[in-house]
Image: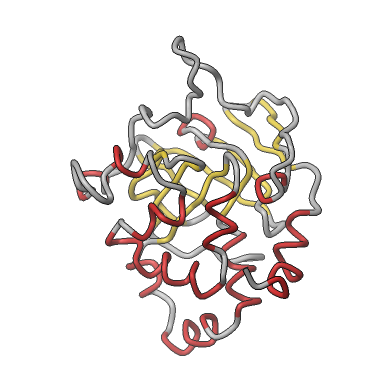
Length: 218
């Protein structure tokens, strides 16, 4: 891995010691940046609860939510059952509508970093989301590992977030900025982005596919 890259925003992300979220009116606490360090998470009300079988609520058996989930394969690469066996960056490579996101993760040198993280949530913009960005701006972005790292870590938060966590939430990202989430009927939003399909479980993360790219500080 490019150690110089990690000396940029990722290192800054690792230094945060606490994040917080609000779910259905209750304040919850994250362990901040421990996702990329492998350090134990502090106990909190946002830690996934155990099911009767002992598995967390963010387990591979969780039901996907969102109008776009029907586009996922029912079996084989890119299907929920196969995703649950793979770390998040690897799983993203097998989902056609996340091909741009997966490519950008590679360009930023963050594949190993994301795959080795423990219990994170990734808000992954789909291909249509990146098409909304003017080509000149996207070319400039993809030409800078520093900018890519800042952008990508803004799409990651500590802890496996369930749909209930997103109903009325505020979270600190690994980039250091804040994200707000909400629900209206069957629609979940992360900032101004709509969740196309979410609550997808990989071996180390929960994924929400969104229809817009989130902008740090935006």
